[in-house]
Length: 440
Image 1 (cartoon, rainbow, N blue to C red):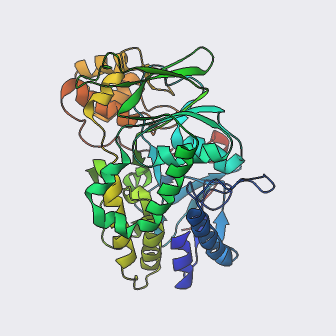
Image 2 (tube, rainbow, N blue to C red):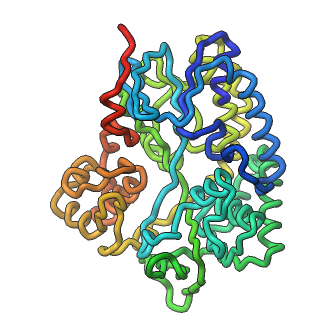
Image 3 (tube, rainbow, N blue to C red):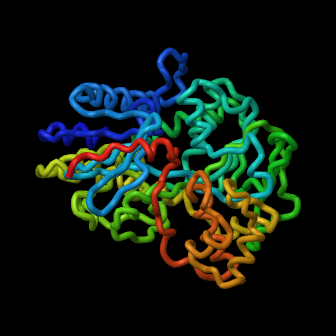
């Protein structure tokens, strides 16, 4: 949204492709018109949301805005392939800004495929987008600030939170005080969420992680435990908690497939979300006319994304980009946040041979280990030999785990990312057959 606003301000004709039915993305997600929604977010977040949505509404009539549309392919010649309502189209813009965001990172463990086990961001999306509770008795677990935020928002919406398990205390962010000062408004919002959790008397655990989800047709309980150096639960540390929702977040990975598909030079940045495109200070990648912005260019949060959108939108429109002072200020706060997102390697020992890793193709950890032992060590080779990442999600859920488990078992992380190919998102054959291609 911020990039579109900036590009329009510099006289550029803008087409905006949005997978969602309405503007806002994940953080500022809007519900369908007419749905009753509660005040679950902090007032500061609500005010930022309203300000940006109002600014976007002021230019929406002057751009070609296409909601519920997927961009499923990008090529080095500048073409973008999109699909909606059973039809597809080829776009040939002068410049493209990829603001594809992130996905949540999964660490498979026994029982994680049971209905009622989901990502914390997914639980938040159900609440924000539909105004309904994803569960009535919830356990929230993971690392970083998001589990705390989701726990507080579920409480405000009427759920009973049975437990909040954080891998690290959020006081880890104190390791970089200047960043906390730069992000003091967000810190204040975090304290408001923390007060909601404290006031509700939620049981809080530090250093415990979900090691088993229990249930038959859906989750009925989760077992939390403290792990030893070998990744095995320390005797006496287990806590079994009844619940009908387990929301887990272990950080994020960048959705960088379209940039890589178009031929952008990529680099691995584990703290920044895995494989991300190399770019200059204005977001320009190695592909002519291709720019990246926001979390899809590296995990740094919504405030950085909005500030960066202004800069990249101007640059893509061929204008002089504004100073990056605002971006640098928000980046300082993200340096503090990252201190709470470290994942100990022993977490991957939660994945047993019987645990499904690739949910789309039901590929188990045991099948992956057999492939590693057979010498298949690149992500492409593992995919060909096990079908992991060949399913509906294209590997977005499992690829991080496939690579980490390969490193666990062989001592070496697979070199390079999986070669991204169309379709980056599922598209029907009917839509491909009904494709509109503009004249050269």
